[in-house]
Length: 627
Ligand code: ADP
Image (cartoon, rainbow, N blue to C red; front, side, top):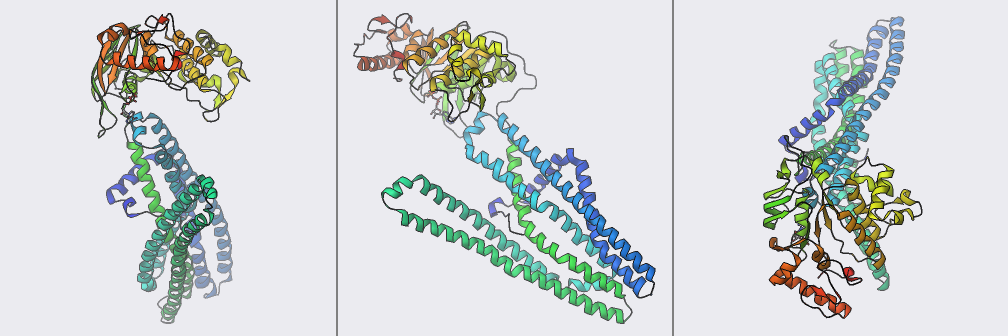
């Protein structure tokens, strides 16, 4: 058997953590208690039949051979055969039961972890890189898998075997059993030493595999530069070093095995010799029987391999324990956005109010918003403007309760969102991102994300209302076109339309739109704009405006800067006030002028028409980058 597990010092669990892991595991195993009982029974049966063999030999010798009773010999042989057959059955059942138990445990654990990750707030996902979370669900679960597949059955059976064998030996002849412990100190000392060495070797192997993979991926990514500058020999030399060092780590493990396995073997032989010698002496002095000595020799023979295996398994168990500890930690992390036990449904309509709202992404993170007071009236269209990083998206996320504010409240129709059911919040307030993330599957199912029960007809009606049904029907397989996030056949504009269509299906009274920053081709741009306008009809709309033309078309504009709400008012008022917004708008107009050779009028109008009322617009103006 090869070394498959190990833990570093900072992964090693202390007593309290170990107890925690055991308690949690026991709780997770509770639904499988019948299987646990079954596995335990099979393991006892397996070990019992294993040890029954030597016992039958003892009977055959003492009561058959010595007392010259042939019947007993044959009976013992028959029993021996029967027990061997039973042992086969128990062995199979045991492997199956323990394997099923382990795999069921892992299956439950994986789905629990996955479900928990889906529920954990965006805050958790902000703080933990996807890679780390993925490694929790892969490598940490894998450490458990290793134990379950390779070791659990051996561990249970071997532990039982060693304990039971010692009890039987002591019962058969306490004196002889005591003598067998002569080599126990050597065994214990060498097992501990081996455990340490193989753990070190395992950790070294783990590190060096990582280092080698890093080398490999860097040289593959940089292969163009490497070849351009003929760095191949250098790279090969560097990989060679990493490779040698991995070899060394593996050899460390081989060397540890090379002395440990023969040492245990030697202890076994020496103990057997002792049992024969001392046992023989006891027989000669009528203190025990030949059968008992034979029983000892045969039982001892069965004992040393399990001892070898157990000391190798110890590391696997430790690393599985460390992995479980990390996984339970993850399961114990509470979601940040939770539903209050007495949560109520949000009223069907109302104003959306932010009162004294403050926010930071994490306990030690700097404040992103402070003291924001803002009311978005029912049916109103409000534009959020401000420089990048000002906190506009954060306001949007708080308004949709993707996060809870650190200070102040967000309320809809007078109900604090923290006291509302999550279901009613998601039904009333929808934040449509710039582009719809595409899940692998057909387009139709992708549109259904917000309302899984939507019928095909409803989807088509919704698309029709946005004026984009035809566009999607023109795709190769229409709404049944297979899509996926990477390499999808949808363009950026189409993905924006998917995002709007999803929101349309939910049909919420409040819509929060993150205006796209990516520029589209003019045709698609017009289509997206038109769909957006249609989607906005009859709803309260908050739009994070990257283009000031859409701010100009809104009923009111709120300017966020450095996490503060600095101005609120209509476009005309704010331009007239000559404050922050007027400056942003001027800068933007200058940009438009520079791009189109149109002289900015400086009064909220450009060239041929006013933008304030949204009636006359410069063609293509919306495609300009944000100011
Ligand atoms: P805007 O939408 O105005 O560009 P944001 O609301 O996205 O601004 O960001 C405001 C500030 O919060 C920025 O400094 C940004 O770096 C920070 N921020 C945004 N999202 C996160 C996040 N998920 N985790 C940590 N900081 C964030």
